Length: 525
Image: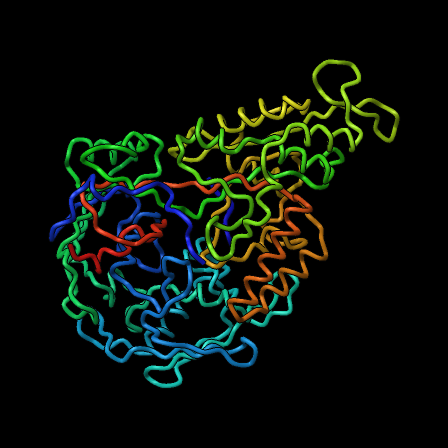
């Protein structure tokens, strides 16, 4: 399940990078991150987001995602589909070894995948692991021979989890591969460019070059990871020159966006912030939902509340990528006059001149356009309530009143599950595979807004049957066109973070969460 919390060319990086403001990295680098929960090295069960960036230079996968957010071969040097996407055959490199010198074979891939699938399907545990979405795509996985893996795609007939014989399956082939005999062990060997030489939970981790890596040895020979209790401690460690670089999503890091001795690489996260609108509310008709979309000034929220640490998006896809329909952007600009026209069209007017719109309900009683607006805060993040208050001020400009109530995450989720809300400011952690069906299909997992569209549900079903990139993209374009028309809820922005560093260590254009060390093994000044 994709969790409620608190993707061909990238047009631009999140923030401009000026390499001249920082030196190139030497043969070692020390990086500060926040980590208090990682007590053992468990690549299938990462407990913290920044640890994933570390794991991703230790462990490799069948497929990687490139700067254009397209699947590229890693351990798998090629693949093909058959049976209209029902079967996917992956051909492995035959020169890959784990850091302990043993060859990586199809049996290791199968064992790693099955470990993930077994955990994902275990009803006796609550934490099904970071890679648990694999279960929605893979029915079976087997080794045809030592260097050939065959995946049978999930062909469930369930309306909530239909067939996934699609192009998106390739994105789920990014799980780590470890030796078959050590899938449940702590610190299993990987086949990546680095290997853990020292680890002290809550203190530090040291990575050295993997002597058995199948590519040329990295120029950066050592990576020291320094653990910190809080994001504030991470920033302080950089300020006092105890580390060379830090990963941070704290707005306190925005002060380092410019500087003569540092470079800041803005990275995109998977966190999509949304303003949910209850489609079953009598007040929130399609006209009113679109009116709200015309009123909410998302760029102002990003600038004033998040110190620029977010990227505006109109859809549940990252802007600037091959999957994003930017031809529809004109429908998402701030336009108070159009908002007022839509509200009037829906029958709302301020008959008593009190600043709040009203209209007669079916019983002939005057009802004001006053909405219950729920919001929750996240650990180490106290700005969401500020964002909600700014949205409230913006909606008041056109006569929509909001009654904000801050709750715990659990209480907001309870309200959403019961449909007992009008507006809610929430976040979703989006999966690596670009598939919005969990938000938009009738009766699906996180369709909290009660959006009921047979056409949208059909489009999402069709998306999950498209096994070519061209066909998959076309369905995504159609889904976004209908999303713009129906306005089931409002996508606000993707949250971003910073890699703040004194040394350049990558030339990758697309720096993204969970892969913040991406490119370091190929960097050679």
